[in-house]
Length: 477
Image (tube, rainbow, N blue to C red; front, side, top):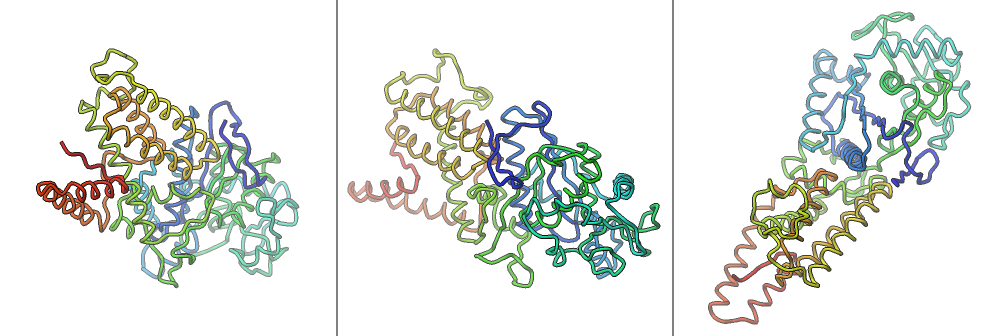
């Protein structure tokens, strides 16, 4: 049974979709006015892994994400560059999608642009007006916050706190905290509506889009922690007021903040890092591993030192997987699934006590790995189990106490892990120091060869032992 931490109830709950095994998952997408940064990457990698694991567990997942391609930020950036706002939005949308593809975020079924759902937005605003939850002024249409007493139930914050967010001061509003559903504007881009030309507010696009594809209620809504208030609160108020149905979402999931060396990432602090900049120094898998190393709900601290640690840790898995392939030394086409055939030629080593122990350890690791992932997608615990397994299995490999059947079963399990976590174990991770590290290991090996020629067995064994401590297996053949 999968358990998910629900931000709304502040507790872990057994996951049960509203409709059999169909999971409707929505995650707030980017406002495309600039290059996406590593904070975006942290959130979208996390939800990609969540979608992957739900699918692995047999659920059919419809993963929807919106693209905010009309917003005051987009218009402001377009004015400064002299571009058309829609053209600018398309440019950064394309860059965002390319970043996601490079990072292996590939489980989103549909990206829904706000500008392509103006009709649905207008319909939802009309519904809110007719139900008395919204009103029109000379400047636009606003949600009447006083008509929704549950506002703040997700964040446990007060309505008055709205004033420090995207709430424009307007004397025509009934309450200072009321937020815009439709902004009456003359400058392009604008769309026709029953209230004159204008464009939608920020919050209304998400609920109009999710209602179109999921209906008024669905399973999971995700996003960054910074979106809980006021964005997700506004979504709840809009959708539950328009439909009269509660809850709008069964499970609310939020990723923790990403800081850079202990500080909030900000252009003003000079620590703003785009995904494009990151990938000039590190492979996508290294950053994905860095994200996996911290629970998705916890804050995560980014630094070059931590990325180097992620590179080295991931390299241990790659080297172990490479060892499995060398031991099998057969075409991968025969390794799609564990072989049940006891007479297979790959079982040249008999089923000894040591092999039985390896098989028992493999089954135990599988069970605990899935147990960790079932527990609110606890990837740090899952990774820790993998490294424990690698450490124990390497000892048997060095002693030659492992059958090819066991190796084949282990490789199949690691292929499953690869699919769940989105890591490609067949390609070595590279970073700015990758080639230097390989060259240093080669130098150490050459020195050890010379020591062995001089019959300095004590020092050569000490070198091999120290390399073994680093999970670098050196065999004399």
